[in-house]
Length: 391
Length: 191
Image (cartoon, rainbow over all chains, first blue to last red):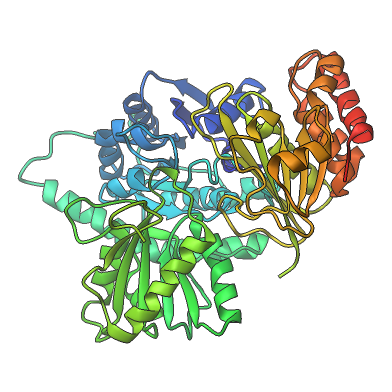
């Protein structure tokens, strides 16, 4: 199954009450597949076809506020168009689950993978889970529902997976039985519903100087509980099917001197490179981030504590900032830990530029010098770029 | 690390290399193998050069990048031979190239100044026109690839094709494709 098929399969098994839908490459096949399930009567989901992504998220917010299990999916410019409502979904504490098929933002217009779409909304108040392959996109979608609906969290969750590289690649998927998924997700009873006239509530009124600040603080609280919940659900999922999940994965990292930090599909390629380097006697390792929001700062700093040099891979740019979004988080996480570790940021793969094993070897090779000499002046590098500034 | 087979497809948009690369991967899965199939979606224009990729392995496949050193190459359009480095990265000793062309393997070899490797040719377009009624050479090229590589059983590939064409296609289309696979399987020759 492709990543899109795998995610549509998870959605079929979840059978949300409401799915709102607007197509955008490379998400189109996902919703196409799910719409087929609706048309074939495999699910009794109310499929709401809307005229834009802004409306897709608005309708999902409305459905979730009424107490429904609501989902949608998008990518890139579609996510950008729903931006306003993405914030609103989080602030209303609505447990919407949304697969986002990572794609570069225009312009110039490009349909291929990078992380500029989801990285751009890292501060919207959504939980973000990144996936290495189609299997993880499926597994993360099933877990996301439980995380979002957990009473200590009550926040929307984005499950991201790389456009085309995962969304359009046929891979092997080990799915759960329909009955297992049904048991896993259970039934959902929303704490509040705007349709419950016995217990009337108002969702989304004007909230000015008097309480807005306190409500924002409550969102922080939900996010603060999320790491424990994500871990707990990741363990329970492991007991169910043998594939357990944590906030991040440390791959051959314990004694690694040269560590790469990454997220998304390139982590799999990096693991193969790490294995090759290990065979050559290089102490290489990978830290794969699964949960970027919440960002498990202290645990990541500890896991990287033995490294002598760190290369952070970013598939997006934060213009005008010192490096990409992942790079800045890693640097901030290490601040004050007492470890003076050389760090280099490798921006790579923008607009779908292939990230080959040789590119990753180049990144590791660069780290050997950093391990000896510390963070260099040219610590923001463009991996796989032609021309000036490229490595 | 266990052996992984990597196959690169060269074609023009509309010739079915995307379907071919994915269908081969799905057929491999039917034989209990791990597999990946994907194209490198270019400008998505009919006639534009494009590539497809298939990986098959007994172990889970972790890499997610294009294939730069394929053990096998399938070329669906011989006008690409002079434009694209179709054999790039293939091993000289046992690289395997299958081409849809009226030319002989020896002609292709001299045109590409190709040393080593095994070269096979088949008139997949001719087969497609006579069996399917349209010049879409992906199905016969699958048949040819299976014959010269022995990667999977032909029945598995045919079974996967039946699955693919069971929904929304006229039965004649499926039957034509099955005949085309069989004919290319029998007619591919090389050295």
